[in-house]
Length: 481
Image 1 (cartoon, rainbow, N blue to C red):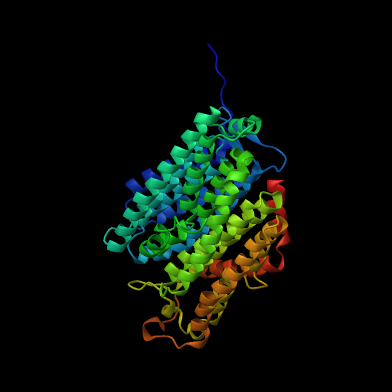
Image 2 (spheres, rainbow, N blue to C red):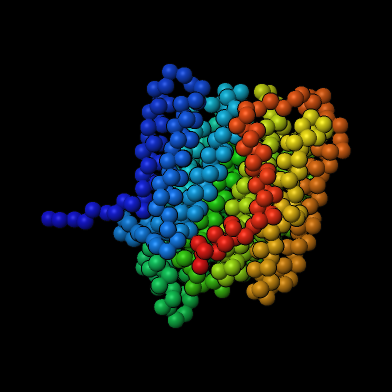
């Protein structure tokens, strides 16, 4: 009796991360010290090794599948994985000192973060609905535990419970939608589903209902209106190091899930999901901006800002063109980098017993540290879409995608939304440059040298990519064409 040994090469980075994750679990369990230094070192080494393996086998012109065609390695998955590695590496670097001073650096954060990242890259390479769901649940379960990591904080515990309950509901909707699509097409494999839809002469009502449930689940994972209820409470209640993790790399993983579900599997029923994304985009851009204006907590403001940005992301996807998909990919990568820097600045200004998460905490930052005030200015300009930062180019690209599709009215709504959103970003700049610092926040900024260098590079990249955006956009175009 003979059997074929599967080709593990497409899943080599995942196997490496899984193995290192198991080693990390043992290292944390048997470490004599509980300061998280061993866990931090193993985690960062793992990310570097995974990135090197992915780069070594990176190829724009080829794709490989394994595990009975249920797992794929292509240029899209490799590119998204590399950005996930980079952002998670920076997240752990930014979070290290923050966790130590709050006695949260006991290794669990890095274990959960590494296994959550494994879920992200599994989602990026999934070529089967069940593999995609497994990756999503691995990420989600890790995030639920991370949000409630600070067990003595009632806000964190409440946020973790809300996230768990609503996340479970969204996962149930996703499974229900997948089951409906399986009932119509007879398969859970993405390529088989796409082929079955293309061969069908008419669109089944059951298939449409399945698409509706999948879009609802995607909207929840992105935090789009009206499925955004969890986002502000989780961003606010979780420790800032956890908010940094949830608000950055996991958005790229959600984009990978969207591409695998709506484009690769359900591209043949674009007419059905395009209208749903239009509604989600308009509601998200409108409500997100309006409610963000009323926020006095910076983490909640950035949460509603994230809702708005997801609305812009949907503009590129709903266009249904290669250029639109590339602009959406460009947008989510840029947003993850902007969010990384913005939450990183909150961590930079925080210290033991003090969270710099209120707008007033940024008052007079220019007097305390002109350089970091300038970095925050660049990040807020990028979020608002002010030239010459990369945020302007990202918004311009997705707006042009819908204009080319003939949806000029939608582009006008997006422009108006950008103008409204500029108010609350400029308010942060006003606090930094024109207000006097309060006594409690007037102490000098103290942070490790590596943190200072990386947050500075993070801000300057937003400016550099705005001046020279072509390389990243060409990468996105090449990957998706």
